[in-house]
Amino acid sequence: MSEVNFTDANFKEEVLDAAMPVFVDFWAPWCGPCQMMGPIVEELAHEFEGKNIKIGKCNVDENGETASRYNIMSIPSFMVFKGGEPVDQITGGVQKEKLAEMIKRFVD
Image (cartoon, rainbow, N blue to C red; front, side, top):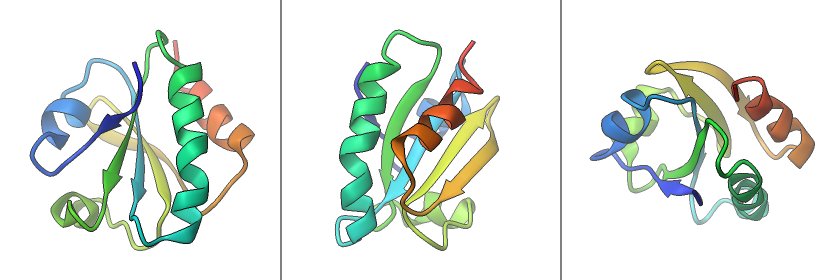
């Protein structure tokens, strides 16, 4: 599964109601660090393909309701949701290994 595009309209179904953990990259097109992290998130989506996790992105400019609900004040922000609840978060540009470790903690 490559990365999914999460929106205000599909967030409940794709993230909150998901049977597996979900990694969400909150980003915006004008954000330099978000642009740097984008290819890394894409690589992780491919590396964890077939594992028990869904990986996707949520554009905060287009999906302000969701960004506001989870108090996204700085981007990029990376959150893992499990059972409909946020269970982990990292904000800012970080090394790929740090995000991979975050994801691995929630993959069965």
